[in-house]
Image (cartoon, rainbow, N blue to C red; front, side):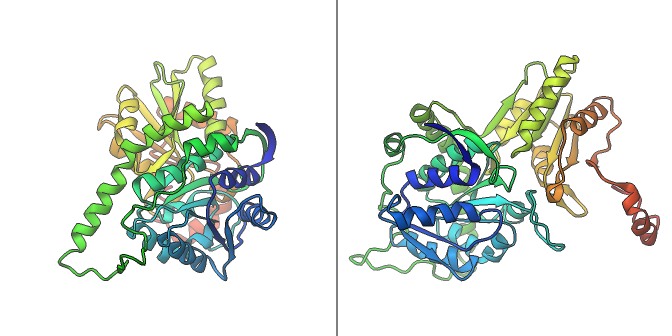
Length: 400
């Protein structure tokens, strides 16, 4: 049924239909509305049977979910920013234990300085923890990705992180379609309990034991191979989801790529603004298209490489900056792009700074005519930096 919902409430409704047995969370802006709605659903019986745990910290929340998962429950949490960093130890443990958890990350900048607005710094900080990372372009896709996440997590026995831009998606009200419970039930059956990482009193086992140098390399190799399996499994599950909902999600999200000499790659909510900029430039005769990356981990190298093969140039819009290096997404795209195709990294929207269609248009035109540097910070205010750069000396101010 289509209805006007705040993004957080839409995600909560999707999670309710997935019937988790345990929800455990600690409130942190901007994910709080999601778990508040789930708490009400548990209290009123709209989500039953389910146990809702108020933890004393994010680390405690995910640690409790690890216990719930090995006991056989379908388990869910949500967090953001410093909260994700605070649970980092348990994030790695959940992946290492191959547990089918689902977590929403309402993407928010990390400090210092403190900033509560959106960018992708938090999830990027834990991009290599072994979790599947999926990025939603809009609220509807966030709903669909959560349905997919539970099925995918249980199919490959790995935790899945669904990333949605804080405030931009979590607090905006949009028209979304929340599938009927029956449709979700057909797509997502009860959690199978035949995995290796489920405690069984009749067959006692120790989970999470110490591994020495004689076996640790093999353990990490298996984690690597297990995550790569997602690239094969996800498209099949996405086809099942499309049959249940009429909507398809995939590893990537192509847009107006026919004859595109310039391909712009991005992920998250900026894809909506980017589509408008691409439409306007197409109307002006510019051969340009965009490619949204939905699955950042594992990274869909083959799909990205196929799109970029005929391009003359690639522009990547990054929502996080690795100091001294550039954007995280651009680094991945550069590995997939043909060696002769230049990859221009545009870092934008840090700490919630708006990314306007006009700014994108000017930036993309500069890329087309060759005047954009390899690393460009969109909307940077040089006048605000003058004193600091002068204090650094010529070397400090020589690079972007």
